[in-house]
Image (cartoon, rainbow, N blue to C red; front, side, top):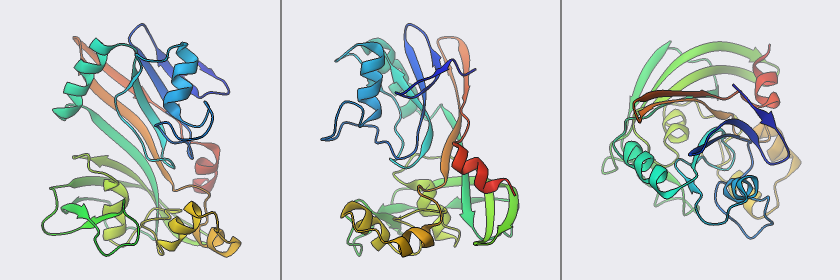
Length: 242
């Protein structure tokens, strides 16, 4: 289904209304103070040679790779955003977590809200007064490497809270490999932001980016069933190829 790969991004699908992109890890979705290549939306504008009528329907964290949907016009954006707000889209992710999961599948049902105790303003956590949040997962593979034991999961979020998958997996004792914010030490995140990440911290993280990939997206729209898939990056695939 992939059409082309160039210096902007991997293009999964394109028509008069939609642009479907396999976002690389370590690229923000929204503009920063960097150049025109520093965000996914700015790269989409370059690809389309447009400056205004480009709308991102879903977004991924900077280090999360995978499917991002972009609308080329206002009408398409309005329709798809309504679909997303109703929860009628279905997403699945691949995640590599620390440790061997005991259960082959399970559902994490735990409310999420702001982590007031954290030094990081954007950090959330499981808390009784948080917003209802539910994540389902299935173990695809358990494996071991010199760095330890790991599990590859297929994850299906039933709700769409900020950092939901990362928080829920860390909450049950299996944080995502490479997660600087919800892994073993949030100072890794602060060190990254402050550009003081040490070689020892990089070694502890194991991977350069957290191992979370948005691999599949399904939804019904305009009388048609839409299904998109995106392959994970080489470093992700190599890590599980044991």
